[in-house]
Length: 414
Image 1 (cartoon, rainbow, N blue to C red):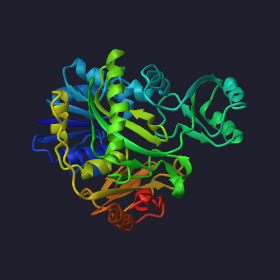
Image 2: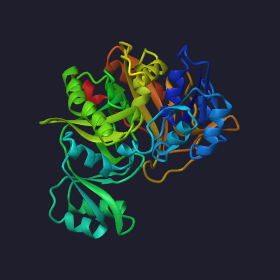
Image 3: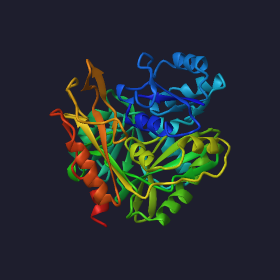
């Protein structure tokens, strides 16, 4: 079959790389893709992922059997709906269902209605009201912009002054919606769940992301500075409880409310003294969690998608090895950064997945904030970390930075 992947980042690079291994697929296209994907797919950088009409026309003209949407923007803007109108199979929820990521408020209201464990919250729709609220709220408090923010619309304010600064950032004008949440203490993890209506199948391997820019979880939130899997110190019982208390109820809640979700639901969870609670939902694979999980996955991703469509049992198979991924980002990210710096020393054989590089005159140069994820595998997390940082050292660029402590939470508990 012919498959089309939508997106241009490291997550989509990993998805295309994984699909290439499937005997069910004989042709892979990526729109818009990036120059590092040419070994695994035909890349169409001339078509933008925002041009839904061109994507639909391409899928029809090339007899595409399945479209797999990587990023959140095309989902929340309704690309799935347009493709389905033309009877094209899509892995990725429609616009209405993608609200679970597109609107923090929608997700919180749904969880509140169906008693799905999450932090207490308050919806605040004006800057003035927000400034009044922080006069009396408990700290730390979490501010979340209602809408997509590429992983950077969340601010944890430890005190009044930080909350003031956060309000200035998240209220560019007087009237805007921000969700203020109770701060939850605990360890976070990412659980990917295949969902088709009320049929929900969580991955039986979880990952742990590193959101903050710098070592020791310091600095601003980012789209993710690294990830690893499995997470050996979070046991199977906790995954089963997350499935029982969160994954199954949210799938049923979506159906009850008339939303048809088909795709992968990312559950960003935190282990509190009261058990697992939801920090956020995403309507697609996490990035960089997808890169480490799909690297560890031995079973056929395309077969899993077909089994999900048919609501058949999904049998995951994983490598025994652990996987650690370290993100290299442009200096200055997630704030202002320069583009066009040359990067070399990496390979395109599955040890690196590219998020922000363009090829110009035979050289790869930076084109984004998060640039490339270097991967390492090993018999345990400690060995995988060593190999991941060896892969980092192979690269040449003075324009990038990275964290040195990816996976240390697991290593400290080995």
